[in-house]
Length: 366
Image 1 (cartoon, helix red, strand yellow):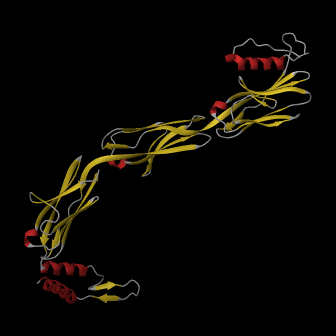
Image 2 (cartoon, rainbow, N blue to C red):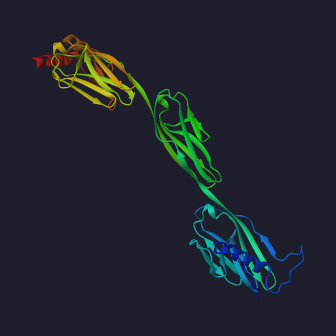
């Protein structure tokens, strides 16, 4: 029996063992040393194996007759020698070892498992090695993404997205909601110059390779000062309920203030109620008096500015009511009739009936 002696310290023990195995397979006992240029072993290179991260890798080589020693190695590490496990990795295990086949497996393959693997077989005549290169593919994963942003209208915005993967992933940006195909990028960076309020929304970064796709989103909020819709004058008869409404578009949402001339109006003051709900504000008079008629100003305010509109509350007289009634009557199909779409017949409303309604309202006032 041939003895292999290593003069190594404890720190180099594994290296010594690997060297010993190599000597054992390349120079077996009883095998004459060949001259330079003569082959001492049969070496076979298998096709590369491509596997995805997280899958199970099976490594197999044929044995043949009269096998005396066999081993699987990964670069400079010994995984198995026959039935003896040398690897401390719990993911590595023996599947099959017989006269025909020597198979091991590595579960939950990771990028660190990539590289060359060698199956070394020593027969009674000569050593034989089979090598294979393992390529581990990794699905893309976005590892660095811009946080949700809040900017003021007119600012310049830069969104960044970085991803890992193998093969290297392609990265792109698009405006997801509201959808806008004109605002996109085929790189890690999306730049938006002089951003407007219409560019606010959700942006999606996509990282893709041959394995999979990873997506993440960024929400972009654009602040802008208020703009107020034109006020609509309101006519109300004495003693009736009157409502003035104000609408403002702003981010962040505007706060509302109501004024009569230069005097600010507050809720629950002289039978008045102010109700704000999002982009709307409502000023309600529960019992309109002569003193309530006049010009009112609604002001919408946020941290970027303000805007205002004027609304007139005016008195609606009986003649105004009659005129309004006649105008509404003229809108009916035909002179004083409304068409019934189901029956095809017409229902007649005479001016006399409308006058009775107006008189009834005047009587109720007293």
